[in-house]
Amino acid sequence: MIVVTGLNEAQIEALVKSKASFQIHGLRGQFMASIKLVETKIESQGLKCRVRSDVKSTVVQGGTLGAVFSVLTTPATLTTATLTAAAGVGHTLVTYNPDYEIIKDYVNKKLKIVYKK
Image 1 (cartoon, rainbow, N blue to C red):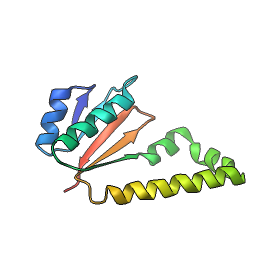
Image 2: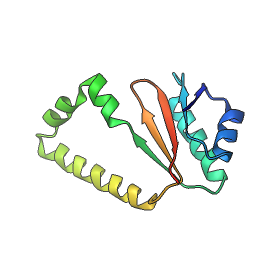
Image 3: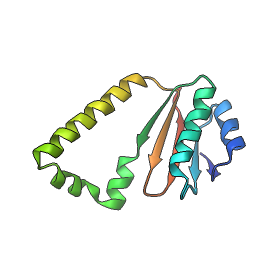
Image 4: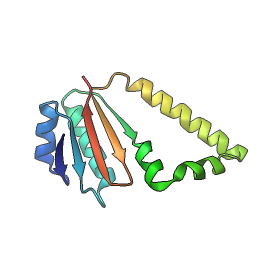
């Protein structure tokens, strides 16, 4: 898989135009802006994309699963978690059959952009 270092807009646009899968590394301090940039580049080509988190990486490196389950013991938090899950399902339905999938890796501050079709 091709690796882009930082926000090289010309390279990202060329990869999206050629419908390639790639990764973007070195996004410290500009992580959210990079997600928006990639999303914009994909949608400007008339393609659909789905953005999701790499939960596996977060759980393995951060050990957050236990913390999440301990927090979910209170009823108010459980209601919030249910609403969040429902919103996630709604987003998945809206972006059904995307051309690209953008996978966020918060722990390592990198993106994996996968062409799906």
